[in-house]
Image 1 (cartoon, rainbow, N blue to C red):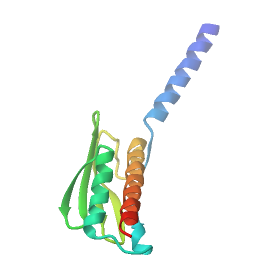
Image 2: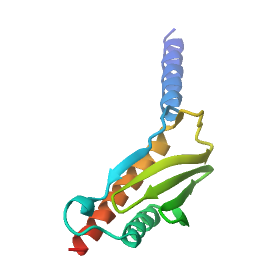
Image 3: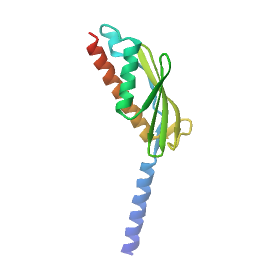
Image 4: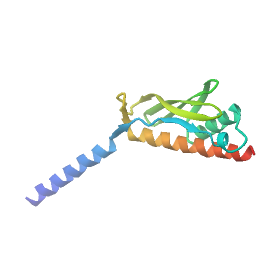
Length: 138
């Protein structure tokens, strides 16, 4: 009886662990995030914004390439997972938008929660590098 109870508890815990490990959440995009220097002094140039974004991606293991003026394609591969985003930017703001993925359970609205963590980290790194550029641009 005690062994059966322990087995049921262990099975329940295992199911709970699997459910949390494989959870999906709504896709996180960054929309029109302001460029710091655009509102506090000398605006950054397109080249400075591009540099800050490319550097942020590289710091986190993203591979980035300029697709056209104001558009960067950034991709990341971790184990058997792949994600691609478009980063559009100007001297005033930038956006990060989902483009494609593999093995991240994307269903048109939701995606594996790790993806959103990657986007959050990328957004923070971009903001940090833009702030550094703005500080150096005084």
